[in-house]
Length: 153
Image (cartoon, rainbow, N blue to C red; front, side, top):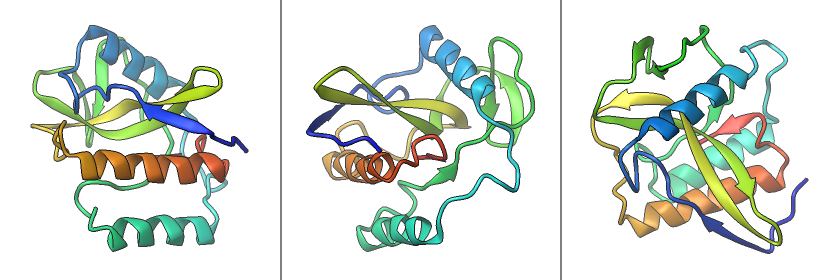
C-alpha cells in the first residue's frame, strides 16, 4: 500500500478547466484499459461502509461518490462513456467517475482522470475548497487502503 507524506491535487479536467482533446484522449485510454465488471471485482465491506459514512457525515452526498473501477462496452477513438451510452465527445460535459492516480516522486500529486461523463456543468465548483479538500481525504483513504485499482471517485 502506498504511504503518502505530502500530496497535492493536480488540475481536475471538467472541474478546474474545460475538457480538451488531451483530456478526451486520456479518458479514452483510461476507460479502454479498465477491467470488465465481474463478480470478483469487490471492495471489502468495511472500506465500502467507511467511505459511504465519510461522504454522508461530511454532507458530500450529491457531490462525491465512489464507484467500482470498471469498463463498459468498447469505445472507439473520440468516444466517451456518457452516463448510459456512447457518444462522440460533445461539448459541456463534466467528469462523473474519476480514476485515481499518483504522479511524482517524494511529494506526490493526486491526478483524477475522468473516464465516464455526464452532460452539463460539474456539480463541484472549481473554487469549492470544502469539496476539493474532501476529495483529497477520500483519495488518500482509497490509496492507503490499496484500493486505487478497484475504486474511483
